Image 1 (cartoon, rainbow, N blue to C red):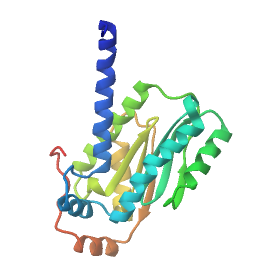
Image 2 (cartoon, rainbow, N blue to C red; image 1 turned 90 degrees about the vertical axis):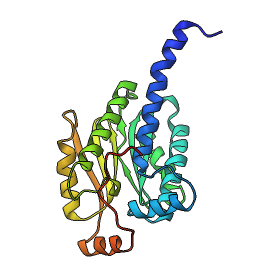
Image 3 (tube, rainbow, N blue to C red; image 1 turned 120 degrees about the vertical axis):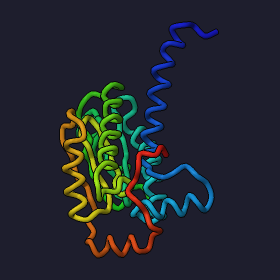
Image 4 (cartoon, rainbow, N blue to C red; image 1 turned 60 degrees about the vertical axis):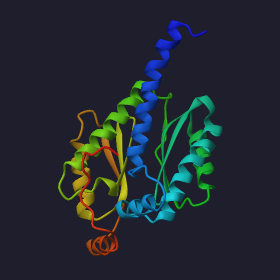
Length: 221
């Protein structure tokens, strides 16, 4: 038997889960198709190799599982990986827990580097995390609307109203992206750029090896 108040509680939780799933799909920046078409599209829109993309996803999934075993209910750790560099954000109870989480992530296969930005604080509220998803969406939308910025070249992650930008970009693209992100929403605390910089020549060479691509549009993925 389902009681009315249980049903009422499920609705906002379901909406939150849907929003999180949507954000995850946007973060991946990969159309949900199957077979060879999926592989071809991934190669065309992402500046990482397919091997790096696979490793990054594995690092995120396994990393958050390991972190949860360290923190239990006393912390919240988000693992975001780009080109095998793992970004750790969220809240932990103390410095020891922060170090223990980093140590666990460092033992994962494929991890080349770690950016530990965990905060010693109480676990954030659902409202705070929902706000982070909104900020991420606004930053991506701002990238879409900016000429010469390819949204699929960037990984955008927001935690505690701090926007983290990752990607393999030129100095020109990195500066432009940082400026655009800062103005994307009024409640952004700061923008942290964790870019792997490439030269303009490297970018041209990379683009020459890929099928012609246009800057991303607002067409739903």
